Image (tube, rainbow, N blue to C red; front, side):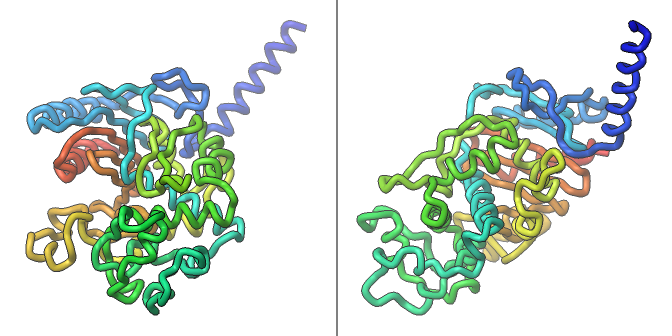
Length: 360
């Protein structure tokens, strides 16, 4: 009997090894917080150890306030570190990284047939429209909101009306939608409001069973407007490893543990260049004058659905203060940062200078 049990155990171990061989999708392991839904860990390669020593030294020399870094390749965590007050168990403010999660909510609603990219914004807010809406306002679509191409010349000010939605709808739309890039966090708020209208749930609740639970992300906090709508463009708090899971999901084109969580078509489109772009703090003409080029800036590489393209054929979720989910498909890798700093290009340059070359 003992011999039979041992034989059965050997068979099970062999089958486990067989079906795990060559698997590059993320699998569960043990995190720095002991979470049972953690990403799998593996030994840090010597080349990456050396690179990370240089990375940390350069960050210190530049006085960059990076608070955490996590590096994944082939779905496994190769390196992780928290410092400067960062903690693995403490959710970090994400600022505009929140936008990528709002985009995911839009993609899921589209996949469920509740919404389409070509739906018109005005159809969702008939009671908050100005008396004589312009043709440009009437032509803004969900796609335009996702790509920061709503047609505004400047970002709307949410304090200029009784509700945030009305502030957006009242703001002049000087350009034809789809023809002019203007970074627009209130536009992302409108996406959050649209998803709430078509699902009957705040996006943080809508995402819980569809995204957060499958990825093993505990129910997060997401700030709201006075109208009880998640901010969408900002206000989400997550842990470093949560961000790494989201990056891995995007790298896998929306698939997680063999299941398509986010519609593949949407995941691919979201991470591709849909429109040309410039940094959020300047206009197109100002970007040209300032000397920003694809050779020296990751802010002029194009924009997807609430996701920035990068140099090195990479893409990223990007939040003020140095919050990043950087996906590098050519290396089957994800790099995550949380931080409190000003020079976000310097932070990205550390990834390109030290981490990227060490990934084989």
